[in-house]
Image (cartoon, rainbow, N blue to C red; front, side, top):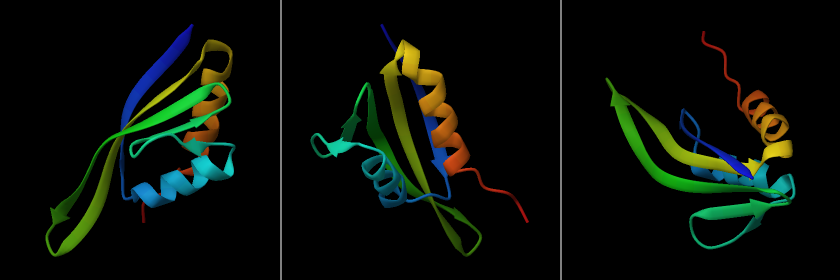
Length: 86
Protein backbone atom coordinates (compact mmCIF):
# COMPACT_ATOMS: atom_id res chain seq x y z
CA UNK A 1 0.00 0.00 0.00
CA UNK A 2 1.25 3.48 -0.89
CA UNK A 3 0.87 6.67 1.09
CA UNK A 4 0.92 10.15 -0.41
CA UNK A 5 1.15 13.73 0.72
CA UNK A 6 0.71 16.93 -1.31
CA UNK A 7 2.77 19.92 -0.20
CA UNK A 8 3.85 23.37 -1.26
CA UNK A 9 7.49 24.42 -0.92
CA UNK A 10 8.18 28.17 -0.94
CA UNK A 11 11.57 29.67 -1.62
CA UNK A 12 12.83 26.57 -3.44
CA UNK A 13 13.21 26.15 -7.16
CA UNK A 14 12.05 22.94 -8.80
CA UNK A 15 15.63 22.33 -9.96
CA UNK A 16 16.86 22.25 -6.34
CA UNK A 17 14.28 19.63 -5.41
CA UNK A 18 14.96 17.60 -8.56
CA UNK A 19 18.69 17.64 -7.85
CA UNK A 20 18.21 16.18 -4.37
CA UNK A 21 15.78 13.53 -5.64
CA UNK A 22 18.15 12.46 -8.43
CA UNK A 23 21.09 12.35 -5.99
CA UNK A 24 19.04 10.07 -3.74
CA UNK A 25 18.36 7.32 -6.25
CA UNK A 26 15.64 8.91 -8.36
CA UNK A 27 15.30 8.88 -12.12
CA UNK A 28 13.21 11.15 -14.32
CA UNK A 29 10.04 9.43 -15.47
CA UNK A 30 8.46 12.01 -17.72
CA UNK A 31 8.46 15.77 -17.52
CA UNK A 32 6.78 16.09 -14.11
CA UNK A 33 7.78 12.93 -12.25
CA UNK A 34 10.85 11.46 -10.57
CA UNK A 35 10.78 7.88 -9.31
CA UNK A 36 13.10 6.08 -6.95
CA UNK A 37 13.10 2.71 -5.20
CA UNK A 38 9.68 2.60 -3.52
CA UNK A 39 8.87 6.31 -3.95
CA UNK A 40 7.68 8.84 -6.52
CA UNK A 41 7.47 12.63 -6.56
CA UNK A 42 5.10 14.38 -8.96
CA UNK A 43 5.48 18.11 -9.61
CA UNK A 44 1.99 19.61 -9.75
CA UNK A 45 2.64 23.32 -10.21
CA UNK A 46 5.41 25.88 -10.24
CA UNK A 47 4.97 29.63 -9.99
CA UNK A 48 6.55 32.81 -8.70
CA UNK A 49 4.95 34.93 -5.98
CA UNK A 50 5.73 38.58 -5.43
CA UNK A 51 6.30 40.16 -2.05
CA UNK A 52 7.00 43.81 -2.72
CA UNK A 53 9.93 43.90 -5.13
CA UNK A 54 11.02 40.33 -4.32
CA UNK A 55 10.16 37.21 -6.31
CA UNK A 56 9.81 33.86 -4.51
CA UNK A 57 9.54 30.50 -6.28
CA UNK A 58 6.71 28.20 -5.17
CA UNK A 59 6.56 24.51 -6.06
CA UNK A 60 3.56 22.27 -5.42
CA UNK A 61 4.33 18.56 -5.40
CA UNK A 62 3.00 15.21 -4.28
CA UNK A 63 5.19 12.64 -2.56
CA UNK A 64 4.14 9.00 -2.84
CA UNK A 65 5.94 6.10 -1.20
CA UNK A 66 5.43 2.56 -0.01
CA UNK A 67 3.99 2.44 3.50
CA UNK A 68 7.20 1.15 5.10
CA UNK A 69 9.35 3.85 3.42
CA UNK A 70 7.05 6.84 3.63
CA UNK A 71 7.89 8.32 7.06
CA UNK A 72 11.66 7.98 6.62
CA UNK A 73 11.63 9.43 3.09
CA UNK A 74 9.43 12.34 4.17
CA UNK A 75 11.64 13.05 7.21
CA UNK A 76 14.81 13.10 5.08
CA UNK A 77 13.12 15.31 2.46
CA UNK A 78 11.89 17.81 5.04
CA UNK A 79 15.20 17.93 6.92
CA UNK A 80 17.18 18.57 3.75
CA UNK A 81 14.98 21.49 2.70
CA UNK A 82 14.44 22.96 6.17
CA UNK A 83 14.94 26.71 6.10
CA UNK A 84 15.24 29.08 9.05
CA UNK A 85 13.97 32.63 9.08
CA UNK A 86 16.18 35.61 9.71
